[in-house]
Length: 174
Image 1 (tube, rainbow, N blue to C red):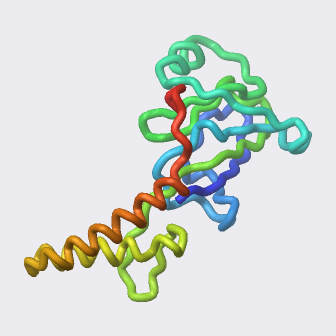
Image 2 (image 1 turned 90 degrees about the horizontal axis):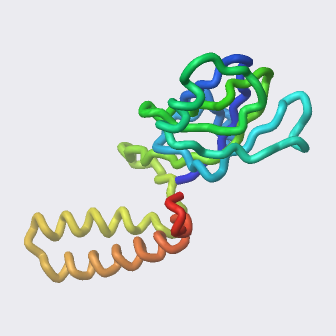
């Protein structure tokens, strides 16, 4: 449920919505967006190439607002970013040229409505969906033995998925 993105900035424009960004796997605008992975953002001057790539430091929105959205600012190489309430990326300082911003984002779960739809999670975890449906079926038809078996299998798959798919926990709040 993670994807990589890229976006080319526009000089003097420091605000970018997820729809402005391109998913690097599909080469299309991001559509199934949930949140940004703030610890993955990097930027480089497009004309200079990836050799000049630098990490972009995350600022909380209030700090960005007080420092970079007050008074007159000088456009320059963006070194910081914040995320606003609409989940837009706010670069600071605003770019003075075309830069390439890259990073990762978390995808939003998509609804499975057709028989041929495939969930985006890794194939080894697809059965969790089936077991969850079986739990609902068993609850509706008052079948506790089926519910218990489905719940045990579901919890086993979800536990494995959490270990292999979620980011590692850290004490710094990221």
